[in-house]
Image (cartoon, rainbow, N blue to C red; front, side):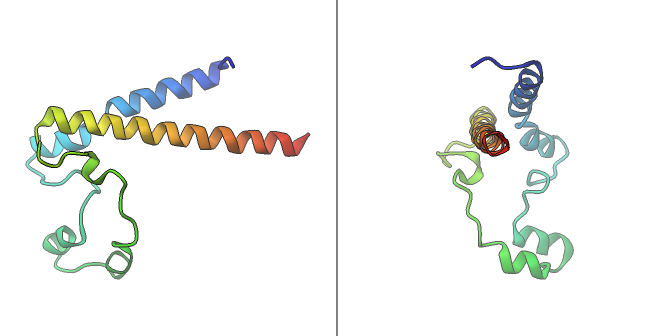
Length: 113
């Protein structure tokens, strides 16, 4: 199954996004910002603002990430290790998303016929 021009562009963009995912852990190091942007725990929010928003307190424990902290080995905290697992996590997420969109688009096309 060949990819058309648009699909190739989307695939290239997804690959590039996967490769730049370590920026989320590198920038906070350069700016001494602690956690990566948007990856704050309820405790971090409380420490920064003095309170935890009601929705965050209520739903923060509902979802547990399959690759907690984007790694399989929490003992090795080197930047190379963390960056590698960020990229692997990005590839896994992009692949799952691509497969789901492919399945959904085939179902839609089949129903239109």
